[in-house]
Amino acid sequence: MSPVIGVILMVAITVILAAVIATFVLGLGDRVSDTAPQATFDVSYDEDAGEVTVTHASGETLNSDQISLNGQTWTDANGYANRTEVSSGDSATISASPGDTVRLSWTNEQGTNSATIRTYEVPT
Image 1 (cartoon, rainbow, N blue to C red):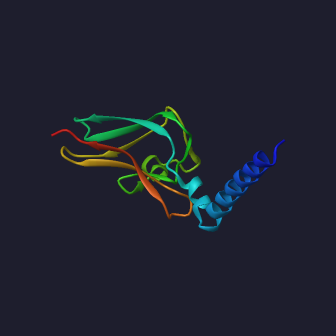
Image 2: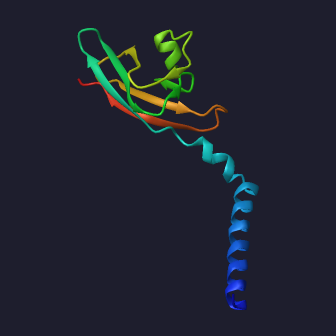
Image 3: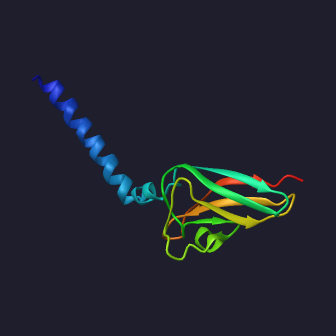
């Protein structure tokens, strides 16, 4: 191998190593696990009952205490005392009136990061 190729390889390895170390030193490595889950939720409104039902349609299984409907945890919304996971097919129902906004949110375990997964405007 020629000396030029050897130098180029050493520089490349040094740059990659420096980038990895800098990521963790600056705290960016901790945020990677704090990204919102990839999940799809379907929403339906029962006008007669005045209720909105949110159903986990597909995607990642979620911790029921980390997702909330209008500030109420999924666990509390459905009385899931013995369930800690929300997976495809699971649903929660809350009361809603025409014009209300239903917001499905996720919060990480530490409570330092959150994201809105789905927003639904109840028809008027």
